[in-house]
Amino acid sequence: MQGGLRTVSGFCNSLERNTMQLNWKQRAVSFLLAALWGAGAQAACLSAEVEPNNSDSTASAGLCSGVNVAGSISSSSDADWYKVVVTTPGLVEISLNHATGRDFDWYFYGATGAYLTYKSTSNIPETGSYTVSAAGTYYVRVKSYSGTGSYTLNVKLPGTPPVDPPVEPPITSVVTGKVWLNGGLILQENAGIFVNGLRQATGKNTNTPNVNSVTNCDTNWNTTPCPRVAIITAAAVNQADGVDKFTNDTASGAWSYYNLFQRHGFAPKHILSHHDTYANNSGNSTTTGQSNIAIINQADLVYVIGGDQSRLARTFLNDDGSDRPLMAAIRARYAAGNFIYAGDSAGTAIAPSTSYGEGISIGYLNQNTLRAITPANCPYTAPASDGTPAPSCLSHPTNIDFGTKIKGFGFVPNANVDTHFDNRASRSGRLGRFLAALKNIGPNVSYGIDQNTALYINGDVATVYGTSGVFVAEATGSNFGTGSKFSASSVRLSYLTAGDSFKFSDRSITTTKTKLIGSSTGAYQYSSALNSSNIFAVDANGVGASSATFKHMIDQTPTSSTGTAPSDSYNPLSFVLTFKRDNQTTGYKNATGSYSGPYTIVKALVDVN
Image (cartoon, rainbow, N blue to C red; front, side, top):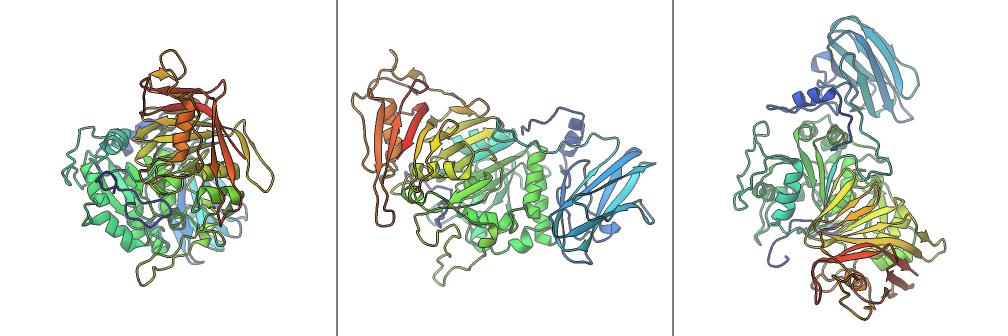
């Protein structure tokens, strides 16, 4: 509860309930997408096989030229059939890719009769082609020569420009599409985030919804004008917990996720796959798995709630970190455009290529090198008899203050992300673990998102929404120590608030604030420095010492402030953080004199020793 209002986020790594435009080439494919996404059923390109598809009469349909389709062979007798509609004579190109240790083959058939061509070598991928002499219906059959497991099929057809494959994001672009990242504990009434932010980002039905109504939107996705959101509750303890969160308001006034999104003008449906049911429900060979994929294929966005991101990794990824069919469907929808990946708390933390969690800042700095695990390390364990969930697999086995990293979903491939950043009441601020992750994981940009705050990344530009702020760290010109004790120098640290934006390609920041601090119109408010004796502390009102010290530093005459991270019984090393300004640093606010409003801090520095 915050300010008397229920929050809707799940705490990342906790058990609390409160918890493009792709830079696609503008090609002739636009007419195809328009047809696919017009009124009516609004079918998408097939992204994953739909069982049963063991014969030509039950073949998976909807295959689009050049679009990857995820499938899986479960036994030596299993065969997957795909229907291929060719609109003009010409060359059909087929590619079958899979992991090493297995050998899958493909066969290409006409509408009737024996196969026309096939590939059954040991090559990976298995590629070949066939020139068809007439338009019509054809089929591809995939079978195993040896081994079982997942595969990717790609068929390029003559006469239609193939749908471009997803653009691999260069280092100048943080994402290829649209990603919405909530920092946790979003107030359920926060229309600024849910309506003016996320709903507007979909580009659909911009009418203001009635927040007092849970019937704003037609539940028929074929006819509703509202954005169609697929709610993913897999970060919850198990499927029963996820169903409860989606379905039921609480006695204390917390809205269910169904009612939350109806009140804000979305048409929600629930994805039924969780830590205890993923083996069946994240695949494509069961009724529930097929239903989940069908929902994804029609959705305008997914919204991944908070909880424990390791449960998300286990639910959607294979042991080796590759996509299960349900995640393959999400990724294909995202790649096709007009689709948003939205997360909150754990759903935000899992969005990068690598996620990290558990532990606190002083622990991460003492640990120095993060422990690494895979989804295979995260089996489901039922709660205790009193309902207490099993510990997260991200929990460090020897020190609860240390952190662990795991493969993420990769929708933010060139940056790290942390949540509940510096205003989680009576909890440790996360700047220390944020900097340790920046060293350990690799991307040279990181985002730290406060509670009741969101970061909307649309291609190259990330914009802040909400009541608090977002830290942006840049390590391009930084130095990290190589010794046993963590140290860092010259990490660029910025702080953005509502309306501010960060452009990834040139690392520029645009602010909505009107007063340049230190100028004739924005004199410094403080004549002396503020230094903190416990830099990662957050008080009962949600005021973090890191934020307070950093904001004071930008609005004081002295050019630096320090904060101490004291040692404790679990963490024998202490650290000093120094915030400072140089000739690249600027700060902005909206008024002079006594001021406590939002700041924008551009490219200050932080050292850790």
